[in-house]
Image 1 (cartoon, rainbow, N blue to C red):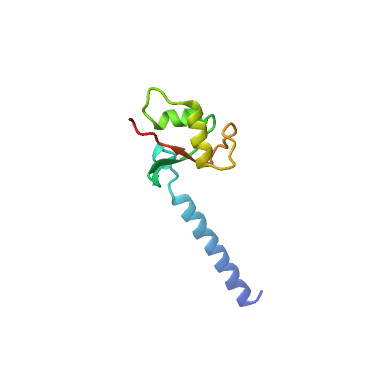
Image 2 (tube, rainbow, N blue to C red):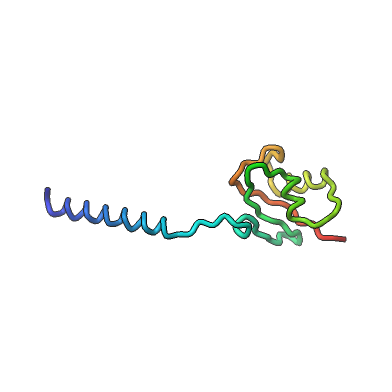
Length: 105
């Protein structure tokens, strides 16, 4: 085997080892802070939320808002406006969606 091939193979193995060590050293967090990001878009507060298995549009909206009463039809309309083309009844786990944040009157 030529010197160039040996050096290339050694470099490749070294980069692979460095890559694996780097990936393993990164902490994976699954806390609530990484799930929700709040934004203000055109004077409307919205939350960018990562969906978990079993979440629904209504359950997430209730979780992020503190109202005693929320209009379900209004929630569906607002969700559809923020997420065009998304079926509100078929949210995909580990995907991000926008949800409205309602301010108390």
